[in-house]
Length: 241
Length: 124
Image (cartoon, rainbow over all chains, first blue to last red; front, side):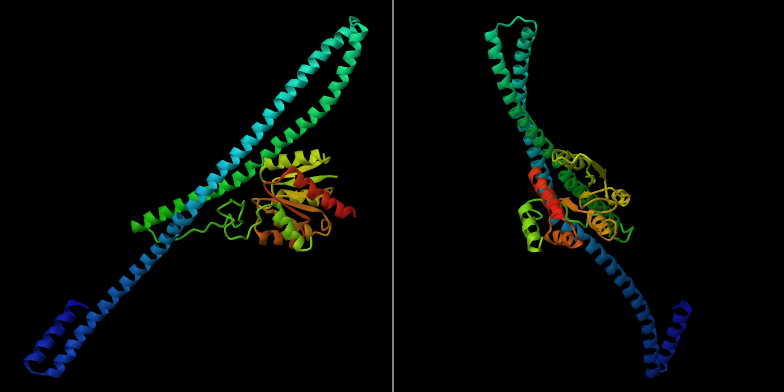
């Protein structure tokens, strides 16, 4: 509404009032008011827009809230499980090594003792009686070695299996890294929103749509996971496997 | 008997390979996801597939489906060794035509049992 236009309206209004022309005066007042209303709608539009922006900001907020309420405590439990698993693996390995070291030491001592005797026999320095006892010792040694080597084999297998933790913990840690990255993105968005520089645009991370390793106390709450191989076997046999 | 072992973690591939060697299967090949595994399978000569599920590029379930939809590979025995343990996933794998399903962490005895079971069924 230009100033001239408003001035003209005002002058007309004064004239109408001076003349006592009530009808004309009311009409002119309505005209002026309607000009004001246009202004009001414009303001209302702006307010609505601001409200919309704020609401979008709120939805971002709720994402962060759900992260702090659920994902972060979950992540703590997941990392705790990583500690448990690595500890188990370390103990399993150390136990096997501690069991095997004496076995290999004993074998080594026996071999050293017998090979010294064998040398003397080859040099023809051994009386017949001693030869007889050495033969018995050799027989015993073969028997014992066999058992010891079976023990070594199974210990090595224990150590081999213990290394499975690296796969599982690796998967769990990757997920926690993704969560931290998500959180970082959300925080940056929130800061930008608070500064009024950017409208929120929540990025979606679809990389891990697979549930991944079951962390006890976190992923088994809903009861929809197999907790061990027996559960898997039962389920498969119920499907006719 | 030539076996293809597919897992994105090299430590797990080594574990499976060593266990297989212990069971008498010395001829093994490795791939780190479905994408690299598929050309090896298509080239022929693989008698048994052991695969993880969650892998970048192409997952184990996608690999399984690709195998079952290929007339040359449709009867290839497939054992899934994975940390994925949701019931619906196990059912999905069964429906896609898996021959055995082992969840991680597993024992040497479990792997042996499942492999023997698969071969028993094939031979019988």
